Length: 420
Ligand code: HAM
Image 1 (cartoon, helix red, strand yellow):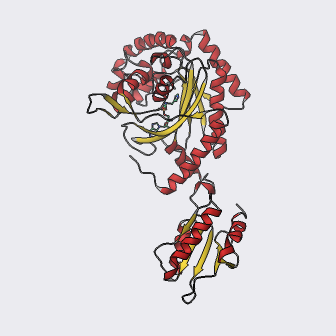
Image 2 (cartoon, rainbow, N blue to C red):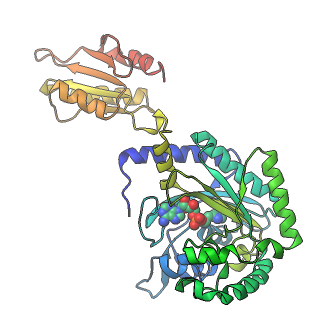
Image 3 (cartoon, rainbow, N blue to C red):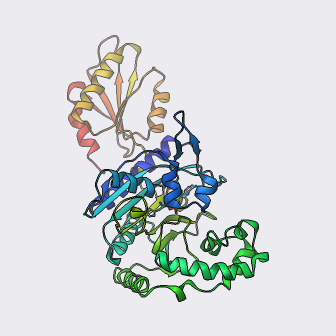
């Protein structure tokens, strides 16, 4: 599990604010659902024969004998929650969520056992317009973060559930004929999940996959038409993409259009966002047949990409607006009273008051550590309570100026409103 330190939290807050704004402006509402669910939910949705369910879930039996798991992804829990609370009954629904997910994968740069996602799911819309809307939403998010040129969209059509069944049988036969070239894990999946072998990274599997019969030959006319219409909508929205026939995704619930946004900057863990349609899942989990589509973004990978490319704006850093420096031992009551007054006057500003004394230079260093904008220096004069403070703008050097202590709020407000 990786720790998320204060500087990173500030970046995450910035990402969350941007995502909330982009999703909110298109009518998506936030939903929250638990980290723990019945293990069965993930088996039924993600699929029994997938890496996630076979090897990566944190599952245990609780004291009451229930089999539960930490959620490895958000779609299953989102569908379960929306369904249980009647949000999907005869209506369309646009939802987003965020939070930690857990997969027991081999940790490496960009791959963690506890990681975080921004996810988004749309229910009740069967046409390609919702797929285009969702992809356009992700593109708008990248633009807002300055990443439009750093992420590429890969797209594939994996057909309907029936198409996949037909194709899987043919693919299985082909793979069986070259089984000795596959690695043992792939060999074990020839019957149970042959599609997954297509996007394997193992060199032997890749060679075999390269010569496999193409899925495109086995797609139903409906899938073909849906996918073609999506490509047209993306082109009309100015969103470029490449088609990747070996993109099948690691979760079983998908059908028709699937996609990933990838980057060349992060090495092996190149996928920053993945998603697609999953029209069968709601019914599979006991609801009425409900078309659905969505995606999830890996927050760690996104933050890493922004940092690597140096695309973090100043407001992605923590910044104290005012730092009150206190010189002279007996005036903490006065400095704290000033801090209280300023917090009331500027409720949205960050006002930090020095505690614990220290030399002037040490205190100023602490103010810089907090990336403070304005220094308010309070000095005790020969046992008298201070009557005035000295103001220094640390981001905008000018001569320090004096202000009467009971009217300094006005001057502070004026200085803070400059150049922000
Ligand atoms: P996923 O492709 O498994 O899809 O995960 C989405 C994103 O989460 C990945 O592209 C990646 O950025 C991030 N991610 C996945 N595993 C890790 C990890 N171990 N460490 C760090 N980041 C990771 C889903 O989870 C689907 N539920 C997406 C979806 C929503 N499809 C439809 N609706």
